[in-house]
Length: 219
Image (cartoon, rainbow, N blue to C red; front, top):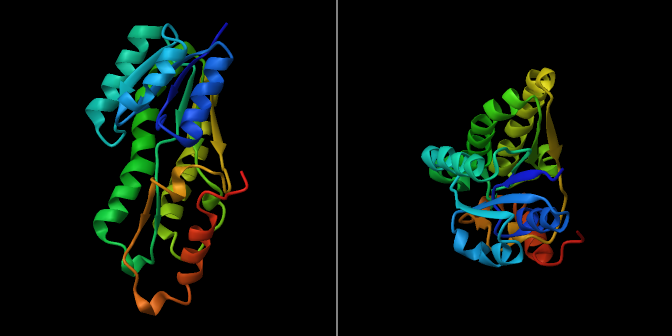
């Protein structure tokens, strides 16, 4: 029997790749993005197996509505993939409260919101898989990536606890920790903070590495 996927951040990178792979397998997919019109080509591939939904995971009402639409269309959600995110580079002193909070809202609280919304359905069915796309940044750190690493560390910590909580219900929690892949993370999904001269020796080399890697990642 085919699976039903619910994928956040489906417009590019891992999200889009997962949607395409799921469709190639004959599965059904709820592909979400803040601007779902960019996903129209996916619906054209399999109109009866794709549902496009507008979703900003930081907006609780949109989270609730997207899950409601998914269940109304396909009857269940087998696999939730929390993939929506961006990267941010800047020393803590260079990063505003607004940027720090935005990072946590999207990559931690957003993933928590979709997980919490889907969980009752999976728990009742005694089946389901929750995939958290975190990062190698959840395992290691680098100057300038503090907010990004903090969000990924937080999501991993919560997810490891969650895995133990929901295991008796037949629900799995999977952490995916990619390294350097050629996604939009260092491109359109990248935020570079204003530079402070005092951090040239510590954050400077990391900025240079990001510029060098953008579009040339090995993955």
